[in-house]
Length: 72
Length: 531
View 1 (cartoon, each protein chain N blue to C red):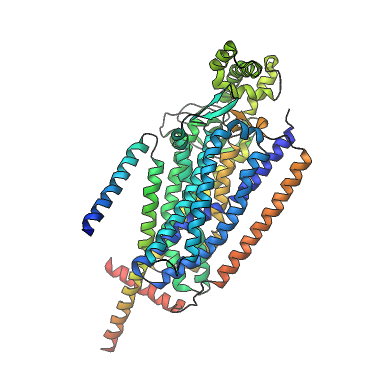
View 2: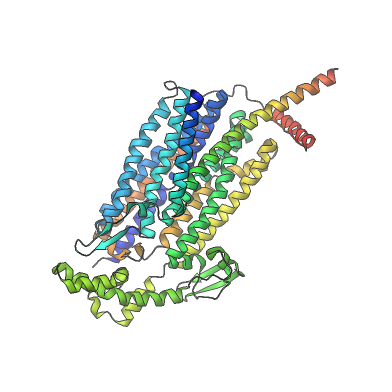
């Protein structure tokens, strides 16, 4: 049921986005571009932060593995 | 008859207050979405450091927001006090977006900002994140309505003049909101705010990294800010081009001033990279040109041309002659509203009404305007070229410099070795004022380029001001400059104090720069191995 509701929600969002794109497209679609672009910028920014954590964890694992090899 | 000194002082006052106000606005626009991105990572990963980041940068956001509101309030009142004829003439159109902006700013933003600041312990994570997004959306939508109003002044669409009521009336709200100029201007300005927020966060983070303080917070803030910044800078440049393309067609005199185009040329037109425009000689001195580039830049084709001031001035003479019967008809209609002949005469010439008003500055009885007076009025349609020409170039140069900065910053940050490049961190700190200056330059281009009109080709600036005394205007101008300077000093003091103090949590778990250097070396090895 939850999956279905999410599906309906995303379909509605997609519908709104398509209608907006069609309506705004006639008069230059910069507002629409702003909506999509801002969303993308925020998501890429957030992903960049998460990626830094992953890089740190990776580096720590490498350093740990190197130390074990030297001890062996 | 208006005293031109009062008109000039009214312009100075509005320009001063607007430029002061816009020192605060872009940071609010950009920092709000950066806060949302930081909090998004906090909600998705659950890591405390991202909450600390959102709270710390949120504190700086709040200081900036409070002073931005304080400086913005007075500007709305200035329309009534200093620009009363303008307000009466276009108030029916201009008032609608300003009223919506007031509702957006004070209801949406203020409510959600309160929840954002005080809701950390009272709201669930997801709810607080939604509130932060609403703050970001509200801030940017407030800017939208102001820019829609400003766009009407640049390219008056969706409205027409009613000769019975003697006022402009709104014909189509959607045409007003969705005009090409409004769209391009809003997105350009909003994203310029993103760039400002990104440079601010990157610069302050670099300052912490240089001092080995709050290193974990600063590294993450730097990474997120530069990614946010590089995408935004690409966007702001794209939209700058779009705005130039759209605005250039709608406002040919502004475009000619931006490019120092005194004489019309055949395609493909050269671009004046450097020049020293002389208003007196109607020519450029010491110009350095790039062949073919202007046609490509402003018309997006190699065979496109745009008119120079020689052609535009001649067109203005013709339009002034066409506008004189419209003004005469209005004078008749003001005493005999039902005069059918006068109404027909007005309808035949209404597209040139604004040009008829231009010559009224030199000849109150426009029917007796001489050729010399018409020529002088036509010459008035050429704005002050040198400040527009150079403001535009400084803005573009700063935009390109910021793009170069962000690209390099992204490379260093993704390699995870930015702390090894102390020279770059120092540059990052010195970059902080650049986007603020670029924004101010952009506004100078937009507003000086619109002269001599308050509403382009419709209402001349000389008619728009209130009839105050010179003494009153000087007194209020000095008062505003003094008060706003105090605001700027207060902002700088509060910001610097908050930055020096740093996040509320101590540097728990922060690593020193030696371990970071080791990490960066390891990271480099890893990257090499993966490559």
